[in-house]
Image (cartoon, rainbow, N blue to C red; front, side, top):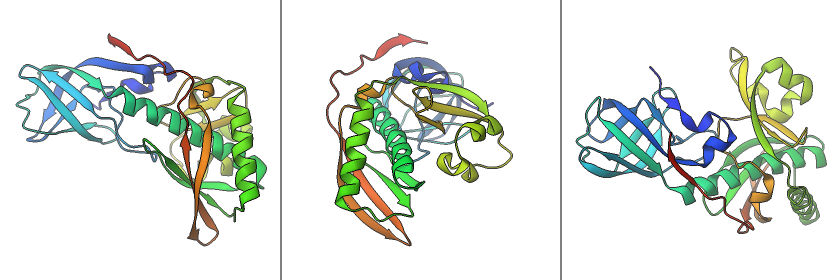
Length: 254
């Protein structure tokens, strides 16, 4: 049975930091749990780190990968066995940085599409201190980057809520053009999708990442770099200011 992904239950679940679980598979340097809050590498977003506390004490989680079974790679010998009960806790600062960065990526990609003749996002990488987005086809000049920055920060100041819901592929296509949501990059047999929505209709995008619940938490965005990646593709790099407030993590075990 696949690992239950607790962080996908709703937007607010991304703010949870502690959970209980059982070990379902165990190797020398990794374990699979029946449920987890740890986000695995995927969708351009890096994995969560943190700790698992089991019968023999705490051990670090240094890397998380997988789709069905979520594999928690551990920093040292763990002595965990199938059936052991653990309490996991994610590194909140790392998680929250990714939440802010990923939501900012959705916003920038949507605004760029509207400003610059339907330019597509063809890649992204979410990191702690800065992140990047690849656009095609486009050739940014400084005025364009300034316009993108100012418009993004203007929208952030409106404090739109971020929500998630499950939608059918044809529903999404009736609201947003498929090239904006990159629907053509998703396997055609997947018809029901988890969608992240900003405001009423500001942005709508299939995504299994972790996100903040209000774009005001992004803070202020600054575009700090531009690089050509060939064939009409340009990469921009951005960073975020400290947000006005840091959402307090939840510590209850779910």
